[in-house]
Length: 280
Image (cartoon, rainbow, N blue to C red):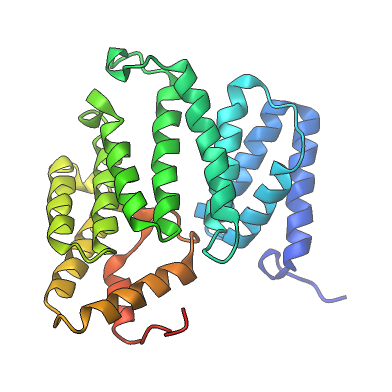
């Protein structure tokens, strides 16, 4: 029997091995099981051996099992299922929709624990539910964008920004990311002036913090470059280029993650080399 490296193992073999790891961890304790599941999804979505399809299949299997997860771990558990589904999702499967269900569940659960006006929360006493709430709202916006619902996404990113209340000025990275997502949504609708204005807002939020955002800030600048290049196209070329970019986004699905990780300059350049499929 031929020997396989871990990377060369068939998908089904790796899937069963990871599921057994999670099962064994849950047998030890619920906390150990949740932590093991989180570690596996993190490695498959952000690690050196990332495998978004495997992450999604694991998330699907875990979602269908009934684990006794304690109340204080439910949000982490559900959000990580949502993340696995997001990374393995595309417009041809139903994972984005299912991911949104899990993130929306987290949003609702956390909202129940927070005051109606989050500005009433002291800046130095932020409950864990506040960050979980913001994260779920951000992810729901990402899912709208990845699904190609760009007007809905623009509104969702605007809501993600406004929902932070006074914490917009405290959590400048996530706030700038929401503005960037809104700008990207405007770009995908050909609203270039709006896109550039929102990019300026995002960059202003990160003024002096550029080095702290090694993924977000460069991608904001790449979106700006793509928007300016698009604005310089002949009017007759713009619809074709935009459709080609949309096709690329659809093919990529969520395997790169949310909007923060999308390189729009690369998408723009690649779209100039291909013609959109007239049947898409």
